[in-house]
Image (cartoon, rainbow, N blue to C red):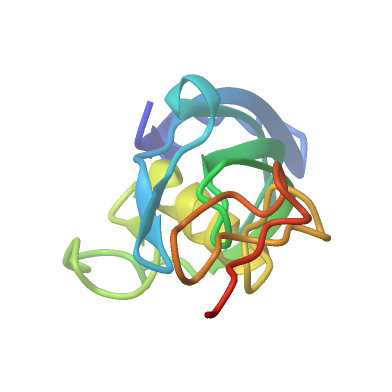
Length: 155
């Protein structure tokens, strides 16, 4: 699922409803390298709270981000917890174009794009395989994590 139809929410007498959704998250480029979430999707909790004709949407999820370490190019596996809130005033989303800012257009929510953006906001500045990653040798490209005593004799 990449989009969620808000018309499927049935508030009845309740002021808040919840849905657990499997949402597809496209791979993305971060720092010039490709990253993805496991199996290409996250399991998120969408809650919608209604006050009159206005709705507050909240999504929450935890996932992993997998891709190359930005120092040694080994595998980096980063845990991410994300939460986002969108406010929808009655009539605000009507006629909004897809490429405008906001995740709500007409009566649907771009949950896939919203989740991907929240993941990017939660990532650290450097995605590393571990905090003490030594990186690669600037001379020959050897992995300094595997060869910490690595060096070059300058004669």
